[in-house]
Image (cartoon, rainbow over all chains, first blue to last red; front, side, top):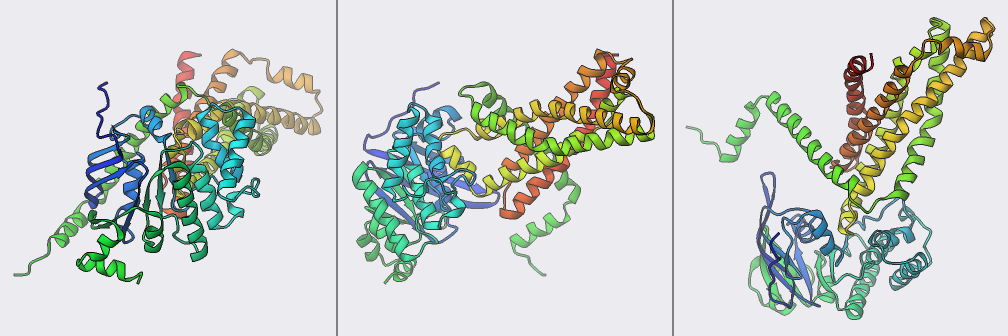
Length: 252
Length: 256
């Protein structure tokens, strides 16, 4: 096996000319992205523009048709399961609908990745699970099943599970979609808290502009499988592109 | 002259393509995907770490929960056989596919629906994202549990069949259990016992593999889950019947 190629040290995630189609439908049409260590990038765009697919490609749940994805400088496209899993252990993923294991309790959901990764004794693991659940304010609902808690609470548990292996990178797929404004801002506050406490690198896929403004250092707006514009919120505001103006005006 | 946009032309071409070609493509694709699934599975079964706890949980889930149904079916078959034919006990176990088909119905539908629901709600993706191999944690444990449990469940069905067969017989024509069994097993040999038991393990493998495969490739919401559960039962039952034909012949050749 050839040694993994290294890229410049400060990029946690580097995506180059990424293309992906499902059947005849082209979803990503040459995406270029770079996220520095400790940075939060929000990827905005209308529903169905391939934002979630981009996240799934970055964590290796889908394979691209062409292009390159480097995580911590290592190319992940075409990796077999074992080396890919080693990289996945450094990443967390918060799914759109939380994707909690519905036959396991809140506590067991958060313990699941820890049990499989090994290295912790039973009492240590229990303590870590309680710490994680306390961070997201869910320490009182340990024995509840996912079906017995609200959507916002499920997101919190999902976040605790994504943080279980102390990842360096966290990927958020629509973290505030389907939540009421108050719960949505609570989730935003949690994301900000995580960033401060752990120096996380994150990509937040969303179409919730207020949320994106709150949590991210940089924004990227996608259209037709491509990045239309990238920069700070001010950069986006300065754009004269009709689509950008239309997208931002929804918020004002 | 009327001109068609390109999209319409391709649509027209698609419409004139015979449905049988489409079916054949999907048929071979299914076998190709099954092959890939099995290769993932083989790696997952043999490479550590091993999921002993989940395996034990599945043994309980598949075994003890199928037992009442299988026992009842075995008992009913025993009664009917002894009423109708006074058939020998030995041929009872070898002839009936009822326990296997019942387990296929119960277990395959259960696994197909469970894994199908996990797939469409992204729980299997979540598992992959947590660096856990779903082939190992979900599929291998269920399939191995099926392989181990089917012979045991069949034995339980046979036992119930024999016992109820004796009760039925003795009600009309009193006979001691000892005599009933001695008479029934008089001509029984090794070949009447081990090869048929082995056969049920193969049926277990079929049920497990088909149900996990159909479940893990489910897509398209609630309807996808329903399709996964139904197809798991139909395909595994079909394969069991086909495998029975083949295995009966093989057993006749190797254990005459």
